Length: 392
Image 1 (cartoon, rainbow, N blue to C red):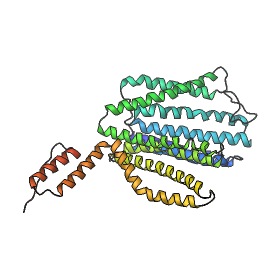
Image 2: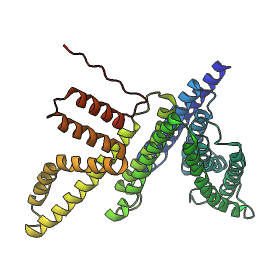
Image 3: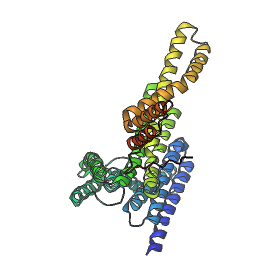
Image 4: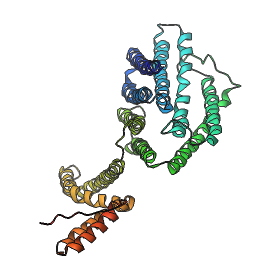
């Protein structure tokens, strides 16, 4: 039975690879279709991450539903890429009957269950594949029903296919068109999925909590990059579908892969307890980057008011100033992060520093022993402390 599951998981990964290849080939063969290749390539990274990580979990932990869920999401997105590229190629080149392209385009709507599973079933079942409690079963079933209804509503929207003249949706229906509004209820279910994750975190043991922190960290990376890149295009005045706009979309789509990668690491790795240090460093460097970027832009604007706007002196001076500020700014920001978000670690560092300073002038062995045991108890918090001193 395990061999069958392993072959099936590998088959899903192989199917994703084939579908992505079909999508890329169709994109290259479609007239004026190469403009979206960067976006397609970045999304392919995310699809590959879902499929490969899901397949790896399914092979090593076949009883954990998360692996199969991730592989399914990757497969659904891969089908969308393959079907979208194929239908676009058929309808724009006319190498196959138009009806074939129109029917294949219906499959594009599988993005709805893929996204719905990410927002509902995935947070509901992380990290062990089971629901937080039997009481969440109704929510799981209702969310799946809403996902199915909204997919039907999206699929039956009447009109042209991808705004191509002379085409029409073969399953378009005015009567069923309002069902697409159910997708907003699916979005609301995302809140329920996140709530289930919070409930599980509060009830879980220390190991599960570390796993969930890894997952939250990876999701936070994607969300942070998405929030940062979202307004950049409008702030820079980039036109839609321009090279700059495509680059920003490619960046945000690539970082979407952090979610499945973080899930895979949390489930498959055993040495997880360095997450707090990693989060601390990430927050520190993120704050450092924002601070130095703000200082750099401010100095450039200020120096341009003093010297000629066309002079390179403003850029050179600002660069040197930011380089000089790097180390002291990093130390101050990291200390603030530790003080506000990791108070226990910060207090431990302060305690050790105070102990080291006090011990410089201490000569009483008994006093040193008492202080050392007290410091170890405050910082490491072991169940028992013993000190053995070897005297000559």
